[in-house]
Image 1 (cartoon, helix red, strand yellow):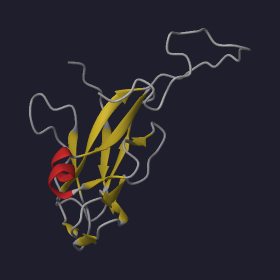
Image 2 (spheres, one colour):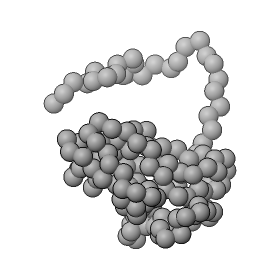
Image 3 (cartoon, rainbow, N blue to C red):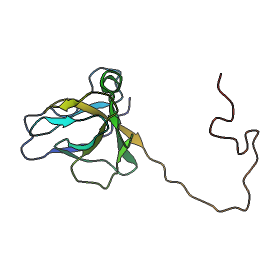
Image 4 (tube, one colour):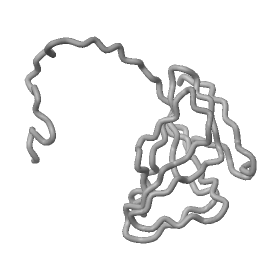
Length: 150
């Protein structure tokens, strides 16, 4: 498996939190933890930016994707509004996770809670060329449920 070197800075006041890490040999995402100073209450329907206390240097040609954790989604209705969130190779600020409570009950985020996962992905840049017409396919312009529900 190819390894990509990623430089990471733990921001002041967050040395008590573990670095992101893979929880199993087959994990594609590293768990990211909440760096809240006090417990953060997330009411149903509420959106909050949760700090991580981390910034990263992703090499050019790659991105860090921030994705929700499936257990939080299934058991508590907790997700991310902009999933996946993208950390570009030229961003050096603190990583923040935009969380939402889609559940029916209040949810508390505590310091050190695993709130997201970070996946490192290759990025390709498109070269656009404007044309008068696109090639045809059997699907054509069908979309948004055009194949029906079975």
